[in-house]
Length: 372
Ligand code: HEM
Image (cartoon, rainbow, N blue to C red; front, side, top):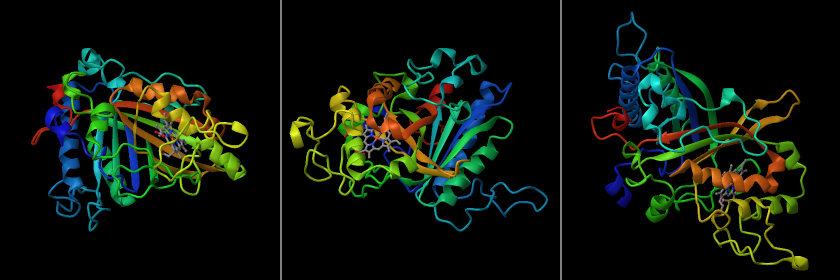
């Protein structure tokens, strides 16, 4: 595509048609590891990821082709399964850019821990990390196999800090995909940026050569937010109130100003008694580009249900993932959500920000542009 021609090729897993399942993991480099360890790890990860995305085992020897006296190279649970559209996407966190690896001067402006937002209730054990890997696939076993084997390959160099499973995409990245529903029961992804909209991608998602730094040209920034949803409270809320909170109708996903799912919202339209048809505090109004200087995010999140809480409620929510060309763009949108009516029903409990480098050139490794 045009952007690829000017800025280098992008990593998979951003504009790729959103798959049905996610395994996301954040890693920390181990104490006393060096720049060489980091470069070697990224090279080993690139090799294994490239194979797994083709449906191959992590090495040619694989799960059953090696010595019976040694643990197999591949863990084996994906034997016989197709690649299932697996994509593996790597990111570099703010904490990677320090003296341990001689990267202090390479940290892009703005690649720092996201600021505190109103209503945050962040768990440090579900936040941040030197590195992250997003594995998406249409078969959950394939996504888990990818993270499991990449974690194993990291042995002695990086350890997993936290990870998250997700099911049921909450967005779409192509017009052929239907709009899925999130755990509030609403269509999610209606106004997302689509893969064929290269102008919107250049404008909102890809870091251009002039925006720099050079090693990040053609890359992006990934934000992850683990957002707990107060499902039981939501389920006791009147349908009209649910619609008001989102700003769209639950049946069709149409804006409350009228039309169908893909009609643009009309924030000037009035409803009964002259009140705005779309509440100024609705989620769609607060998140809309008109409220945020034209900013759009490429959203790619997943539902999660991690069992139940000790009160017997679903420990469930949205693992929000978005790609944008600068951290500030995400911050602007989330700040606008400080008055979002939806806040009564959600809590942000985990957070992370990573720079996502461009795809490696053939025969090279992800991040080679950074490490030289
Ligand atoms: C739109 C749900 C969190 C940014 C929407 C829509 C729904 C929704 C139903 C309307 C359909 C669509 O266009 O996709 C949720 C839920 C969330 C959540 C349930 C949390 C549990 C967030 C967060 C952000 C965000 C944290 C960014 C900081 C957006 C944006 C839009 C949107 C940019 C499109 C607005 C437009 O252009 O009309 N969301 N969202 N959302 N949301 Fe969220």
